[in-house]
Length: 96
Length: 181
Image (cartoon, rainbow over all chains, first blue to last red; front, side, top):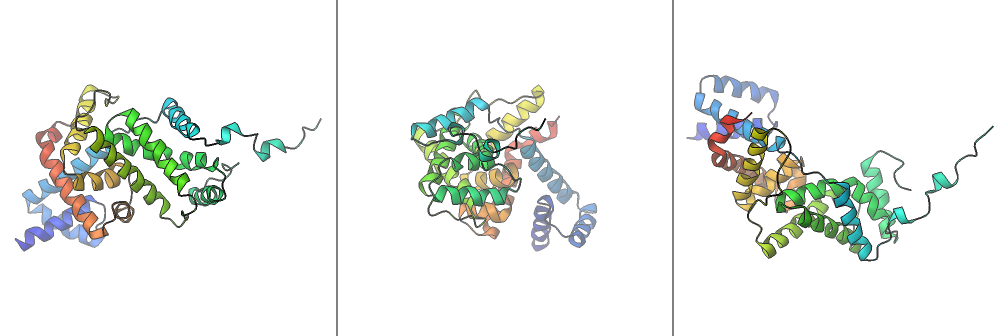
């Protein structure tokens, strides 16, 4: 039981990419003879991969506009409403 | 005014300082740094765009309201996620948003889209204490330490929930994983 728990901990750390190389080698040797644990690791890796592949919803320009409108409704002055930034105001004159 | 350097922590310090000095326009700079991540996190928790926009907007308004207390000591990002999470939980309680709404569809092949919806639904079905670490670590790519700070728990507790959550999600997904495209 204890051996199984220890192996599970190693698998969790490995799935998390948090296992030192030496311990990883020990785990690999263990998994070569323990098909149940090997399946455990493979399926957990698939879960993490499936989560990471879960596409992020897009933060569209319409959404950004609505967020900023909500701020403006609270009386917040945004930079886009301000005069041009100094590096534009004081740009060097174009030379002939 | 603020977007001249590429280093996020440098920018974060400048924006927070400007906000503390009363320059509300710096909020836009902080939003440029973190707005998309907060929106994405809120959308994944709430499952619809309108509520995610509200939560994003309110998260940054809270930054503004507490501008004098905030310090650019590396904890700002985790504080931001914590605020967003609390707002999302409040909204979920208010609206009882338990179902994945129809608009939560994603682009890609039919099989991949189906898997994504299945994964998101399975995630939503997990206890909240498992959902949080999975969202923060596996979806938003926060470190275990950062995620622990967001959730106000220890790193070992975070890791324990993360590992149990992955196993619980795997059990919920069952054979779906074997049919991954």
